[in-house]
Image (tube, rainbow, N blue to C red):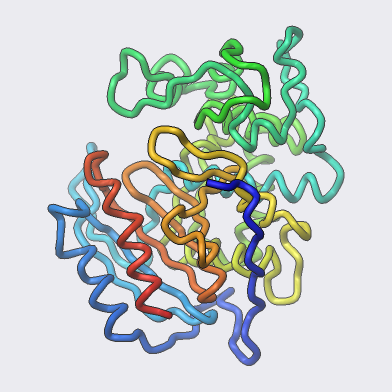
Length: 349
């Protein structure tokens, strides 16, 4: 599959449609859209559990629905409603990409330069920030969500690395020359997040930067980026927000990083994320820079923030649309989600 496909243009906000900073303008959902969206909730054998679906087209919220209760290990299940913050898992990586873009735009970080990781005095010192964002850094990493015996991501988030996720990831050795091999890695994202924290300050300073410079200006007031004990934003995995707020995040990227006349992300930064750099040899998935590209919807330029168990904010430039799906889909069912997204966008065409 060619990796140099031209990018479809990103559409501007339609004239006369208010920006959804405070509330979403509504539109009428086509019957075909409602049918496809409802299927996601009804067919649990195919899709697992769905907590929320929200669909935006032309800047208007056409559809939202909330489903099963959200389980908790320390308290009773919680009904999922419009204002329930839901966990991003790896959609946080795309939030991290946006925050890094602000710093690149200000000249405080440089894509082609190494990020200056303390302790990288060997060949890892040549790894660039852009190689990290593209998941082509060459570091040894096992992104396994099942086998704790081999998984680096489980050990980082829930084991010995959980108090200092960046230090755990930064200790990995090289497996390949930097820039040569794609290897999806939550550890890599936390190395990038630590770079952000060294630039803007750790802990509350980093959290405040992400909120004040990216999320709050677009009305994502429910957003809750989490920080580890070392003060690093866990940019691999931990941002909570409502389905409507995730739709705002998608709309920011559909609008090329501009929001209500204000440029939030530097010009060209959304393209940096959605330009195909790699093809995952395991399943043909396409990757840009902390964003995935839907290989079943290439003709419409669909790209997405994607997280564990089927979290997704999918952005379709050709249809001026954003689709959010949040839930719990186990690994054997994950291949059913890309065709469903394709049919959802078909219903808007």
